[in-house]
Length: 443
Image 1 (cartoon, helix red, strand yellow):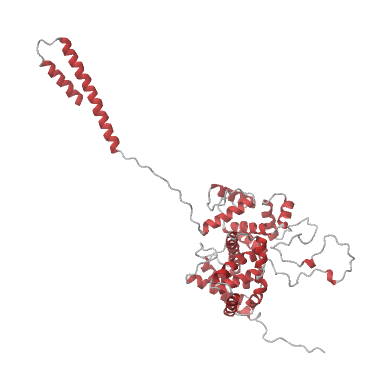
Image 2: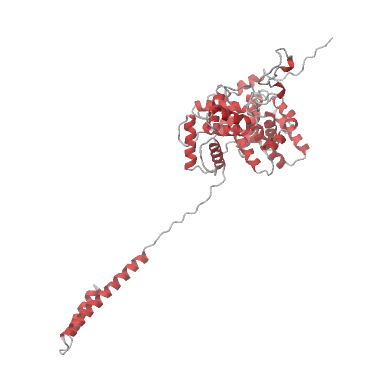
């Protein structure tokens, strides 16, 4: 439009020119006007485009990477990644982030075990994976022997542990009835009771050569083996019992018992990793000191009330000369060691210390042990007070120590523990300790 006006002005100027102007000058003026108009048009167009570009806004999105918070969930994922890597399912660096590698590794583990390969572990699948990892780590030479026998590398351990839980012999071709190295998931047998693989002694060697499987040196039934069986039951039932699906309260409590054991092992392992210059063997040796120091208090579990036991343990704490913080940290590490090596005296002694120090949610462990008879006489009636103390502490605002992300767990514990309260109270009459012991006059 603007160039058109320039052209009209040029024509008007040419009409107004004097008569003496040559035709060539008119032509040159017209061409000059046309060229000037074209250049002006280009300038105008470029200016309009520039204004349009200025009016346009460009939005630049800058993404800032934020490292995930070190939460309980991240710690759980890190445990899964460590266990998956150990059993030959590459999950990558154990960073606590459930990325593609972790999901692929989890799916491979699920396919190996015959589970649906979803890439996301169900609770019972995770429990079996983690408990199998800790068992393999703590079994020493027995683990290496089992790996060599199975011929599938560390993956063969998973099937071996599963087979053992359902009663299939793990050492099918083992030449000796007892593994070369004591396994922490087997009831310990005194060394004097072990029988050589090939004995040349005569048949009548006397009673001293007979193994004594009920010797006082043993620690009773294996909790690790028990939890493997519980994991298989959970697997066959399609998952953990919930408050809504609660049928058999003992099954539900056993599942939560083994879940608490797994969390206790993991917490202690994390704390022990921060200790400098202390080997696992040294930790185990030091934690075994809980056994003689706490023996009387552990024995009192199946005889005295919760209040009496806790009060006596608090007296022991005052006489120990250590600060509560020191005792608490030591007890958490030794609780992990006790469960890892399947030493119920160490585990119960540690749990008792933590409860007496005011960390009442750990009292749940005494309830489980009394309810099932691991490390103590089975006393479901006395277990109720320990369950109640732990549940009520959490309901008052205490920090949960086992599966803290599961908000329904406390309600499940309460419902399962007290569902058969009447039956448990009636059963207690048959297991009450005798007030007076009979005396016999020897001639």
